[in-house]
View 1 (cartoon, rainbow, N blue to C red):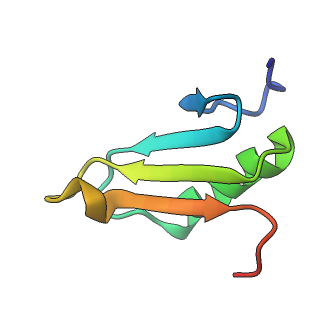
View 2 (view 1 turned 135 degrees about the vertical axis):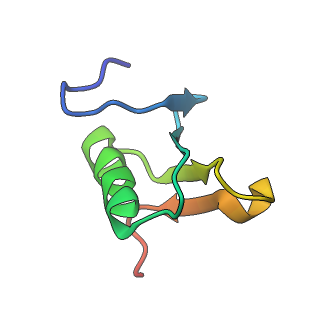
View 3 (view 1 turned 90 degrees about the vertical axis):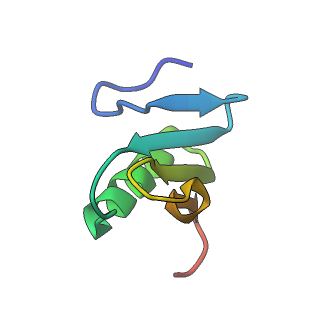
Length: 70
């Protein structure tokens, strides 16, 4: 699928799950909002926001679902 210009997803898995990759000191609220925007604009429901700059990778994985209350 071709995305509109404002969307720059890092990975798209099985044409369903957006994977946004970061390597930052701490994941900020703006990263969550960016990923939610990608979900909304691409009409998808699930994304993973992964921060590689953590001692244990499992602590850097955040699942984001569009359309559910916060």
